Image 1 (cartoon, one colour):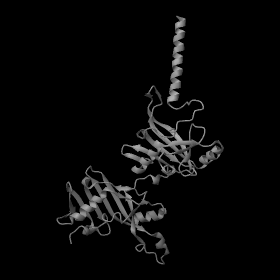
Image 2: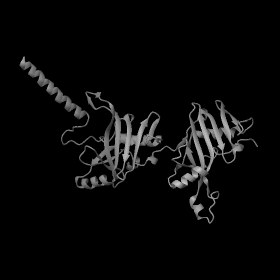
Image 3: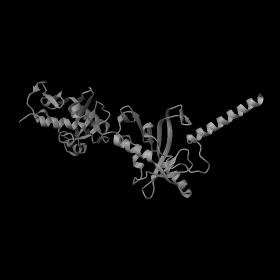
Image 4: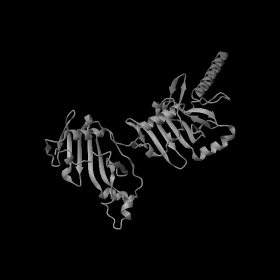
Length: 355
């Protein structure tokens, strides 16, 4: 009886040891001695499982890209560019080791990565371990951390090191001509979507344009059919005759309206002056689901020209090609807009009236 219990105990211990070894190998914790890591060890396996990507440099610049129900967000607050996120995820899925860094250069490359490397952390919905293909303890986890370094001399690859590996490697994306560092920007504004309005004409329920400099030129447009609309003047009187083609063309352009860039050169006092004194129009677009987007338009001042004039005159310093915009009353951020891109949207009521 004792011998039988001892046999059962030995079998149980052996099974536990075998299971632990399998878990370690399946999860990449152990590698066979002397064997090079797989060429795709830097890559992610399934981009749909990625929940967060943290990118930072050694100078303190960083950005957090996180997946939400409505798409990717930048620092949990701003919508990320769809194309840029797709490009990054494609690179991360196809990142491949080209070759290990030669031993004589490893110290130099490691020093370069320590000083100027870009840290990349990848988070996924992942299990704590897998056993025979079964996942255990699945939740959001940090699954990969690596440092992207400078480009190689041929500008076709990058030096990089993965946490857990002993030496740096030369990595690239097969079929891609160039190095991949630009895909890993650590600056939040590089990731922010430039979209202001993205509503098809069939989805527009109402549009209000309030002209603060000439209130009589304000108007309101209300959906009355699949592609028909009623136009009202500033006194909320329905206008029976207007240029339908102009109005439809203007509304159709709301499917793709973007800002030029985020204003970053103004001093706090200058930005406060713009917000206090130079608001000239407010546009509110409401879709058929009741979602509203508000854009406040402010005159763009050429401060350099104003300062250089003997007698500063803000009205003479107004830019002819740009204006500032504030989206949904968030005054912490001014956007540069081009009149050329918003030409029809800033037109007064009289623009739509038949002559």
